[in-house]
Length: 471
Image (cartoon, rainbow, N blue to C red):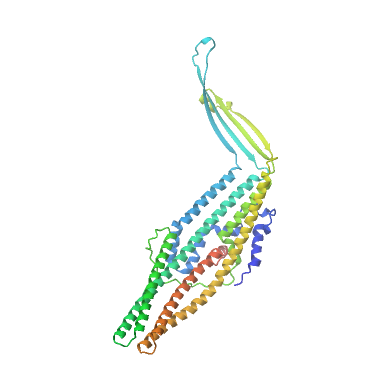
């Protein structure tokens, strides 16, 4: 499969950032992601479920669901998403009027002239008022600020989806790693048991005078090495189990049960995978949304030189009687408009413009690097898929032949045809080839997960699937 990112990446950048040139940004003015991005983000569960079915492992699906519910990094991302949407709402609030209400009361003491006493020497005054402030968006500055906040919120949303995907993928890879660790432990335990039985036979032959002391010592060393390997495999298995429990949000007590064998990859990679699948990757969508936010803020910084028109209105009622406050005849309103324009702020406006321009250029480069990295990850995963497949096939042959050679070597040793060194070497080869086969099988599974992660989901575009269903 031939992906030429040198042709595809500029086309993708042109479609999103307009060649990355500040000033040519009209296509980003609405602050909304492209339709292809929206469809991908609209159904994140599809990204989490479709590719999982390729492994045909219900235990894995249950573990992924548990991680989605209990993983603390995912909860952190959800809290950040909530914060981002709150910030977007704050940014949008400037486009709406601001209304304040106040209620005041005062007590006055009156004294009559000549020292005469009044019947009601004290009077209670009540005052209720409303204040309204509204900045008219003459130049669209408030709209720019609102769209920037919305783009930030959409970026946070896609960060959350990316975290969901990452947690699911890491859960799958840790699960495969735990299964392999269990298989390695079982292999090491089986080898230690077999080597210990062989040692008994060799020691018995030495007692009868048919075996040499060198055979005994070499076989004992082989058993001790197998025991050390078994302990190392047990430690690796325990660590793998605790790592998986950690991502699941469980206490790392090494109490998770595991299946005996690795699942097999039954679905081949289809030919002609469309490059536009990358457009659904949530991390790329988040990078594009941050670029859009920076673009809006750059435009806003350019408009800060323009004057601002604000409307203020004040009204209310005043009465000695609290009940009279609701009398509409006593309402008094005053409306005023103020136009303010920045004249001299010591270079603050120019500095803000330069700052916004720098951040925009930073986001252009960040987005371009994210696209390039995405293509690189796909290329690596596709290349590794074929290399690992061929390596796995070769190791299957090596494992089968090594096991057969071990049996033949022990048989010939029992008949005195070969020495103990040949036997021990054949045993080590058999164990090593099987161990390598387990590692490559696990690596191939994890690489397939990496490919799904690089593509942003399954091999099929959700939009294409919906179109086919409608037909």
